[in-house]
Image 1 (spheres, helix red, strand yellow):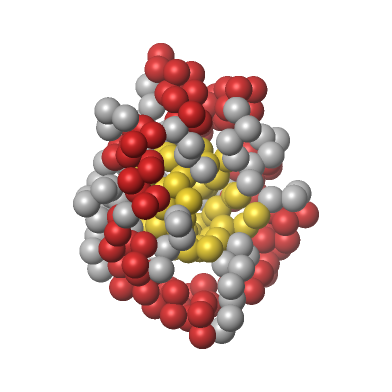
Image 2 (image 1 turned 120 degrees about the horizontal axis):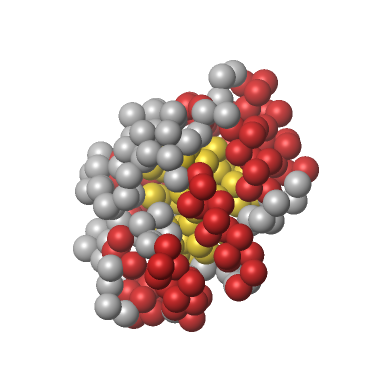
Length: 221
C-alpha cells in the first residue's frame, strides 16, 4: 500500500486549521510542503509555507514532507529544519556541482532528516543513479514544478518504471519513489503499478467532498 503525502499548497489561510485537522483525521501519511522562492520557479510560497509549518508543528504529529523548489538550497534547508520534518527534498537541477550535492545530502542527514532528490520532467532519470545509495527518496515530478492543479505528463510514467527497474536490479530497497503532480483517482493506479510507493496529491484531495474516503481509495486502488 502506498503512502499519501497531501500537498497543502492551495489551502486558503482562513480554512487552514480546519483542513489540517480534517486531513489528519483522514489519515494522510504526510503533509507535503511546497516551498518556492520565485526564482527556481515563478511562484513564491515561502512565507505561506513557513506559516503553515508553524501551525502544523503545534497541532499535529503527522510528519512533514518538505519539497524545496528553490535556488539557495542551503538557506532554505536551514529555514525548514527547525520544524523537524521527516523528509527534505531538494532539486537536482538547483545544485551546481557534485561536491555541493554530496555536502548538502550530508548536511540534511546530520540533522536527523531523510534526504529526497527531485527531478523535473525533462531531466533524465540516469542523472541521479550515482547518488541513489546516499539518499532516501526520489521525487519524480510528473508536472512542471511551480503550480498546483496541472495535468499529469504521461511520459513521466516511463521514468518511474525505469527508476523502479534500476532500484530493483541494484537491490536499493531503502529508496522510496515518490511522484508529484496531477495525480488523482483516475491515474493513481497506473502510477502505483509503475513503481511508486509514495504519492503527492493536493487538488484531488483538497477539492474532494470526503478526504478520508479519497485518501483510502488512493491507498487501495
